[in-house]
Image 1 (spheres, rainbow, N blue to C red):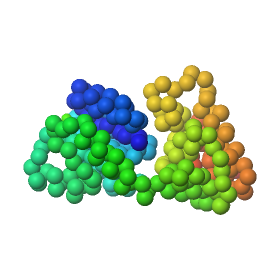
Image 2 (cartoon, rainbow, N blue to C red):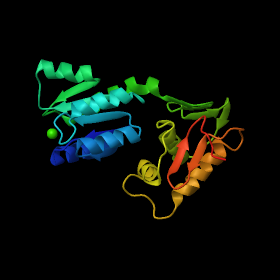
Image 3 (cartoon, helix red, strand yellow):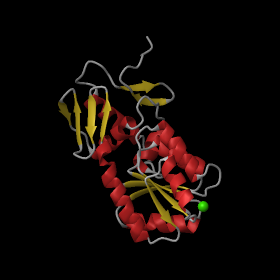
Length: 226
Ligand code: CA
């Protein structure tokens, strides 16, 4: 599971990230609301762990903003020191899926995240035009024809398909593929080429477009300048 943790308490955040990584999760981390919102809106996660009390944009506002975009409906678990009924209800009303009151056992956080991940699986099918990516079965098809991709190609395709119509720059994609340690070589260009060859070459209409000087976008009906 890929999880985004947004928590401004550094020691707690480090505990959560270390624990989840030790349990086989892939974890991204943000220490403030704005960074968290940017990561949540840019990349795809199986679940979000959101602290309610954050500097800048607080957790509830992030939930509301993400739910308004409703791009995918990633499950959200709120962390809070508040435990009154009203605040719980406010969290759920904003669109959160689960709730943990601090202090909590990391084991319980893990169990709840796995449950949320299972619930989120019906959202596992991504579509752009006639291109379909079933993430649970790990099957990619275009116009009914099976497309084989290496693992990194699948991840790259997932980044594009969870941000349909959005131009993704080099930094977005490198972060999505390799986190904070991108390779020094221009590996990204090679992976884009492999993806494009697999997804577009056998078909009439290209889906993956280059936007010169900006990045790439996966889109069904993009006007290509003459
Ligand atoms: Ca806090």
